[in-house]
Amino acid sequence: MPKSKRAKIVHTSKTEKKGKELTIRLYANVQECVAKYPYCFVFSVENMRNTYLKDVRAQLSDSRLFFGKTKVMAVALGLTPATEPAPNTSLLTPYMTGSVGLLFTPRDPSSILSYFSTFRPLDYARAGTTATRTFVLPSGTLYSRGGEIPVEEDVPLAHSIEPTLRKLGVPSRLMKGKIELDADYKVCTEGEVLGSGQTTLLKMFGVATAEFGMKIKAYFVAGTGEVVSLEDGGGERGGGMQVDVKEGEDEET
Image 1 (cartoon, rainbow, N blue to C red):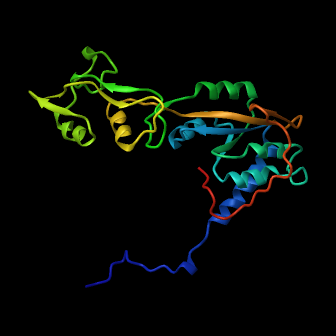
Image 2: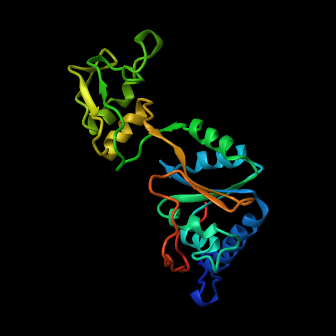
Image 3: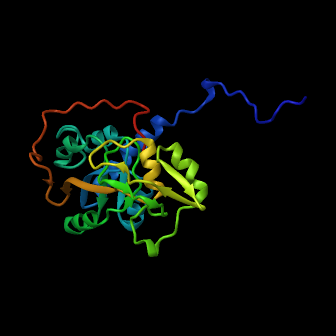
């Protein structure tokens, strides 16, 4: 039998490591943007979704957005006054913790803050997140939106889904080709941590509860060297924050 052309042995000694190259490129790009753009914003992300981050990039096409490799971005901004690419950029590094990114833009702070305050699309919750509302399936015939819209605007849930509902713990039954519930069934309660079965049911009934959001933590004004904190207790220079850059940490989105 001839050998498969797909089965190839590649020795690890011959593979190219791109992690260091990407790190160096990100570092250089951030420092280049410091010199190019009048404003630099540090933002945090809630309920991260790549789709919506791409929408932000498209809508702010005159700007440059970096997300991922937080430690590399912090080093590029400067950990101390001696290493900062522009006066006071090191004041942003205390905000470079958690799920954060950088936005370099020619747009003034008021327009950016206004944009982020209104761009909050909803998506389906993921397992492990906290329920933002209580959702209950009403008794009687089960409809596709689970009581979220008036019955006259909805359609009965397809009977073929009934076995899936039972597997997910919903005490349903078929009656004359329609899925019925003898009593209300609570899918989730506000404040509880959601399991995979609960998130599956929420998505099945079109209940989107995860709100994607980008919150500005602080921003830098190149013309004056001013750093404005939008967090309580922020804006103070840290005492030489130590950041170790290791190859392979985080990924740029």
